[in-house]
Length: 633
Image (cartoon, rainbow, N blue to C red; front, side):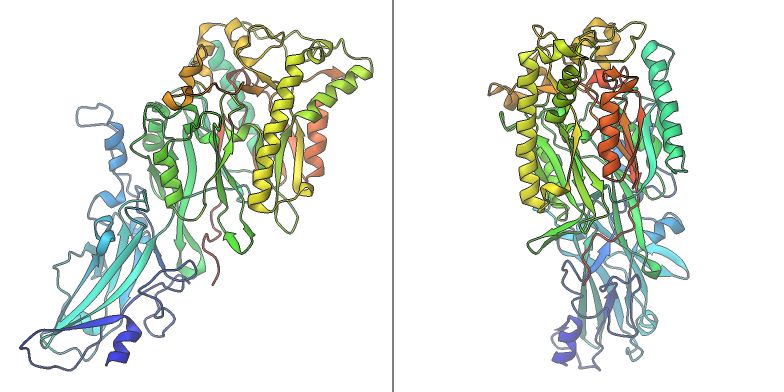
């Protein structure tokens, strides 16, 4: 008897004074081997069912989508719900299974039939331990799913025939120190004076961010409404973008955010996903959109209002402090290294990078960093973005698919290449050419400096020397952490300039915005906080003298969008035109071509570049998530 109990993980509890009865050993099964089915006839799902490891153990989805589209966005009086109430509603917030799509989100468990169960016996099934408050159990009876409460009884007939259960996690893992995502289900059989139990442990699927080896399936963008000059320019950008997306082979129409006029679609959301083994060995996936840790950023509300629905959930973190620097909490400051293995440590879903200010210690919100780390898979890594005004990692680094053993390369902005392009133009007698070929807009002038003027600026050279040093230091971190080599790094011409220096002879984007109408102030990544350093951060950002900060001088080519494994969309360079050719466009095109990409360009000068961002900052992508995040056994 003891050996049988040990094999199933079951325990026996004799009731004092009860008469002995024929032992019935309960056996609860889940998809422990992750093949998409629950085996009750064989033993493939038996071993290790009451523990969980990276390679073995059942997985349950956090059921945070809205399959029946039942979640309201307004109250009974027609007023918009608060952020807290918006986030509170999802499929796990009620005790029903909301249709067949919701049923598909349940992790299945089955009890092995006990045909010799004595008459008068009964059973129970319930979640126990820390996960009991983070999960809900259902039972399938007569083809319908109903909630199974801890005190509800399974009949003798059900014990003899076996039952099918479904379990949902009612939330994502937010802080692994408080709950690591484990859900323990206990099946107990009572009869003849004896109770015996069997436990199965499931782990809540982590919320994972996308990497660039996952193919783009849909593009997201804000379309600013209205007929003002900025609105019209931004609407033209959206129209141009739609054509680029279609030409790249993406058939699904773009999703447009239209309500809050926040053009930085990269920044108020990070598209992510949670997945579990599904029927037939295919993954069952739920998109989970992570709202930026910026409670006052209203654009994040449109994730609930527009996108939440079947197989799409939205998560927002709580406890963001006012002292935490706003711009670092934008999701343009989060990118994902593709999967890799180094020194025996594997990251099958890749690894997150975020920027922080090493000079002041300012970091992205602790609540968000805790959330990301608590998923337990993508081990976030911090890079130093002190030298950037906006402070986002997407301003200087990207990850590119590659036909190599590793499968990917790192792309980085290379200021030395940018400076050399200008130096060569001067050596060839073109120093009098305008630095920028962008035409003026009706209300914002184009820069007027020449190549000679740029190269004569000691501040220009100092700025790009500092940028090169900081980029190299971050590359050294990435090389150490991933094992990537110099031969796997794609260096892309780029230039940087200091922001807000009135004595500088060059045209930084902040200075150009000030030449235009007041409306331009609201469309920059610092939310118009151009005037004072302290507006960028909280107390921690003001404790130390900040590093001189910079943004892209020529539109940042690395701050583009990977539309397919071979199609790259970069911001129009608007560099010096010599012999009828933009020398920066030619150089960028050549670099990406050698890396296997066809590069197309989109004009974002007056819509995004002057706001200290580029096309990547103004867009987002939903990507394929069918590859398993767990390592193979």
